[in-house]
Amino acid sequence: MRNGGSRCPRGIRQLLAPALIVLVSLALGSVAAAQTARAVAPENAAASAVDGDTDVRLARRLQARLNAVEGLGRVRGSVSSGVARLDGEVLDLPTRRLADTIAARTPGVDAVQNRIELSSELGARIDLAREQVTAKAMRLLANTPLLVMAVGLVLLASWIGGVVSDRLKLRRLHGRNPYLDDLVRRAVRVGLVLLGVLLALDLLGATPLVGAVLGSAGVIGLVAGLAFKDLAENYIAGVLLSLRRPFEPGDHVLIEGREGKVVALTARATVLITLDGDHLLLPNSLVFKSVLLNYSRNPKRRFDFLTNVGARCPWNGAMEIGIDALRGLHGVLADPPPSAQIHELADDGASLRFLAWVDQREADVIKTRSEAMRLVRRALREAGIVAPSPVQRIELSREAPPPEADDSAQQRDVSVDHAVDAQVDAARVGGGNDLLSDPTAPAESIHDRAPPG
Image (tube, rainbow, N blue to C red; front, side):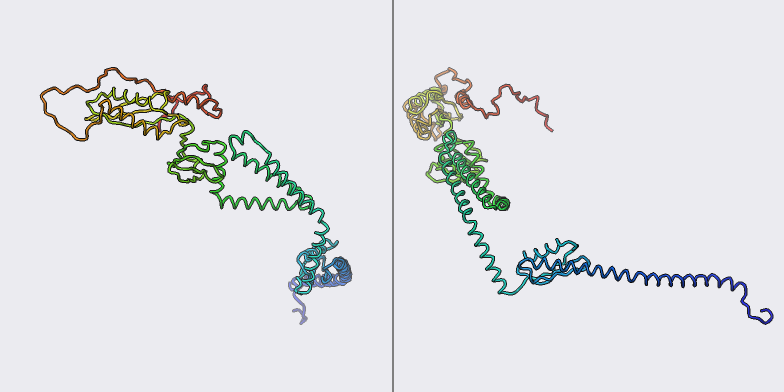
């Protein structure tokens, strides 16, 4: 202080100056903001008033549209900032969806809040049901001519399908494969009936129903295929067997150890009659996958049997005597001729094997074999050739034992047996499906095989 006066130091004045400047700036900014707010407030109020007028106009337009549709008289519509809100009650869901569609298509509406509820008034719902039944009855009555024409079209298609399937004579299939012939005729009839149904639906304007029906049929077919897998497998195997025809009705076959004569081939099973007279059903899938022996496919069939002769008997002579007996038997073929072999040797004799061929179309194999055994045995017995005695005897003699009673030193025929070759050649004639029919195809040799490992 100087001269007792109260002056602020110079440093303090320097600190207070910036603070005063900031305070003055803030005060001026507050005044400008207040003036701006006072200027903008009327404009916002005017804009809010304009938006309010727009929502009111949109609400009126929406309500007018709702009131113009039957069934929406109890629906109230309001609009706020472009969002439409629907309140009230309707009788069914289609009407509720219709109100939503009308609100969404109103110009100026950006979104829709659908709060419409279904009416629970019993009288109103009964009236609605009565009106719907009446409307459908009237529509059906109006469409009666089309309905009659559609039904007539289906009946006509069914009749045409029956006529075509009955008169469809696939001579090649009918003569060789009646099963496949029947299958083709059924397919033709069903196809014509389905064509008539499709035309009838198109006439009634129910074409979209076709897609739904076909889709449902596909799903049902898949479920049925999984549920009836064995039936489907047997049916397909039956079709393939009818195409391949490994047997004919009356053929004598052996399938999986089951022997009998073929009666029929059905959609599910192959029917056999066993040699004991039993009725046997074999699933087609089993027959198709099994090893099948058809005795009737080749009419010529060989049989054989064994007989024993003693060590002191002439074996070569015994075979000649047996062959002569077979030649004189009715049913035994001369070509291929009967033959005989030594099957086994024993200390007390030998076992001879006689073989002969029969034509199954003229003689039964089992009966012919039985008669051949009887005649050969009788011929040998008449020639003094008997079977070795089951009782062993020991003879003491100083004389040398006689040589074997085989009185012929001539060697018997040991050439290759070609009895079946002619039948194989005959079976290969016309075999267009034979994968081995090309004689120029290279054959695998031992040198072509890969070494093991």
